[in-house]
Image (cartoon, rainbow, N blue to C red; front, side, top):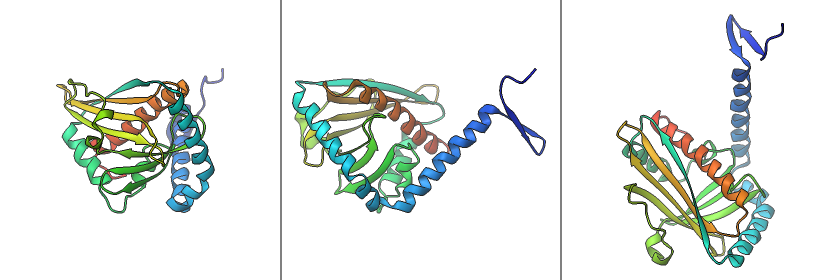
Length: 229
């Protein structure tokens, strides 16, 4: 009888089919990272110009046709990590000048660039929700400059990271709110929320919930393992 799954043996060590498929995933991500680094950030922006222009039109339409914004959240829990440890690791990467884009690229294959603008702004290029191609956003972390746009914090989470989200022409799209709290078991619980136009394609929001889960899990694991991206 044939085995239900494939397997291979290398120098006497056996590997199952899932192991082999994970090799493909690992090498695919490695090659993608290599290609992004070879292109460079400026060339990447040039290649993505048409996609980001279309994305701007799409988001503007959703903003203009929406009477309100809709809040969506995803929770992610990881063991053996405190907010203090993660926060130190996070800021050590995000405050580099110039930024090491590997920090963003390795968190998610849908990341295509990150740029600091002044003290509080980040310009990001990413596939927002597995659909429509790459979007370009400006994240403003100085939310105290626009208190009317603030989303109430969850009092159960003592630590938070909030940013207003704009298009390149400063059209206000919505808000991201990432909140954290330490668990009694030594782990970290995170709550990632989006407050975006209600007419936005639901698949975009659901897809970005998946996106957030993967990218932050990778960042959490990097901080937990004390390794540099």
